[in-house]
Every structure is written in C-alpha cells, then in structure tokens.
Length: 204
Image 1 (tube, rainbow, N blue to C red):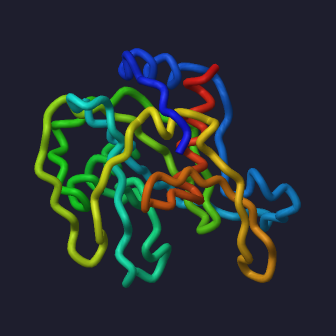
Image 2 (image 1 turned 180 degrees about the horizontal axis):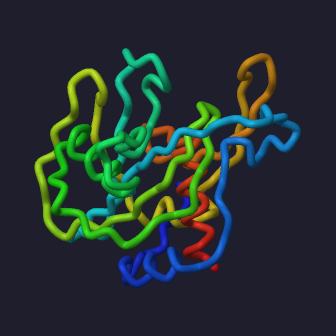
Image 3 (image 1 turned 90 degrees about the vertical axis):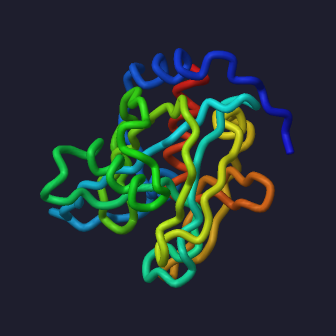
C-alpha cells in the first residue's frame, strides 16, 4: 500500500478544496462512448462524507451495504439516499440518512460544504455533503440496510496515487471505473469517483 501523506489541517484543507471551481462528475466519466437517453430525469439525492477528527488523525466513515439489498448489495458507500419531499434540501437528506443508517446524531456533524453533483447509472443526481465530526459517537448500523460501519484514513483517499482504473462487464458492455482499495475494503464506483474528485481538488 502506498505511503500516506499526513493531513495536517484537514478542516482548512477541505474548506479550501470545496471553494475551488469545477464541474460535476458521473459514473460515465471513464466511458465517453456511453449514449444517455434524451430527456432523462435525475432524482435528487444526498450523501454525507463524514470525517472524524480522531487522535490518530482524520478518518473517513463509510458503510458496507447489506448483501440482501436489491440495489448495489455489498458495496461500499457513503451514508445517504434519495431526497424526500419532507427534506428541506439535500444537506438535510444526507444528515437524515446518516442518522438512520449509522446512528449519527444530526446535530453532531459540522458541515463544511458540498461537492459538485454526481450523476449515477441509476439516474440519481447525488450531492456529496462534506462534514467534520469533532466528537465521538456510537455507530449503530441500520438493520437490513448496512452490514458494517468502518473508517479509513482520510490521507489515503485524498492521495490521487492510490486510485486505480479497473473494469468489468455491465449490461453487455465493458465499463471502466475508479477504485481506491484499502485493506479488505474495495471502494469503487460512484463512491470512489466522488472521492477522486475531492482528492483532485485538495491536490490543486
């Protein structure tokens, strides 16, 4: 595993990164030959990118989705989901979903900002909401939705050198995607693409 560079001041570093200009991303970035249907409608969604400021250094909290789920079973993901009509905005969506999926109190995260919208192959317009956790909490996995809650060093996912491009067959075609493995965790797809966008901004 490549050596990780220390994140000396994660709050300042992330705040600067979130203010930098730049467009959104999509699951099709590495597959330019993909033809998207005209007039497609994207459903708004919000995910939380929760970064815990631990004594050992900042760590990114992620989930492993239940293997029993219909969509994306067993994949690594941020806590989050589609925006409900009762949600004030996508930030409220991300905080609500994090409360439901990992037991994170909604008043605990300090929201730093948002990354540009990411379009998924499942027709969601996902807004990643970056937040800092300055206090510990007791994670509780939502039964039937989340198999595991874990964390990885923030420095690992902020290092562009740790990302690889891999591929697999999907709907009869070869699809290329980003991955940023860490130990036993294979972080790939939309989650890795959004993190790769954050890493690029931090590295500018």
